[in-house]
Length: 284
Image (cartoon, rainbow, N blue to C red; front, top):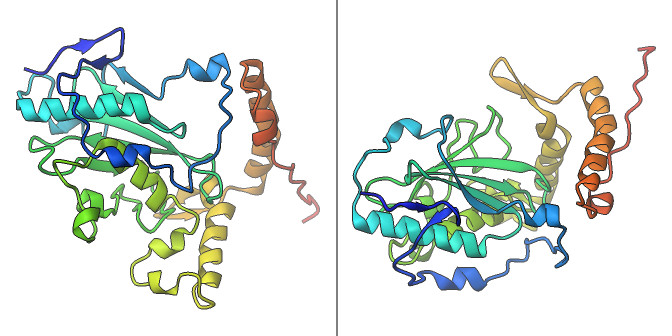
């Protein structure tokens, strides 16, 4: 039977506190944005890790049920993952575990500063198979039907050696005794949603930083910045948002920023200035 959830803390009590894969927790990657240590009460009250009662719209909701029995090893590993996530999640990753289904989890990764994905929200549904942690978790990306990265397919498939969905050396693969969910989420943010996503494409990595590869890399990044953030699905393909849509979003952004400032999130005044309003030529 799965362990009961401590409702007050929002996570189950962890019996085995042995921390596997500790090195990843002490590693501060270059792509982590720098945040001020001074927090507003509004931001501090929004937990990076918490639990919800159920996920009715979860991609893997049909993979099991609340009454399914799991091994003690399976439950202890997930409990340990929860504890690590509660303690060590960076400020740009948010996770919700499921109280009624320990095998389900959802993560939101905020695009890091310095990347074309800066301040974008990227949603991932996670499922822990019965044989976890002998095998890695299953991860589905909510793509909206769009392809925004060579490693994130429009089908929701996530291509990463840690997930066993791409080849890599032994240390890059899932290690049952060492790998953690924190390591996995940090890897998705750092290795996939990075500064130069073009080089994630198989067989072009050798052109990185070369005169041959850089023009293609810039073109790939600019295509995402110009279209994908406001893209839409049209007959199986995608197109950028209309000029009217972009103009209205630019106007509305000031209202959004003002409302967050009222809640006490003062840093938005500097970090999220509204984009310039695009004036269309109605004579055309």
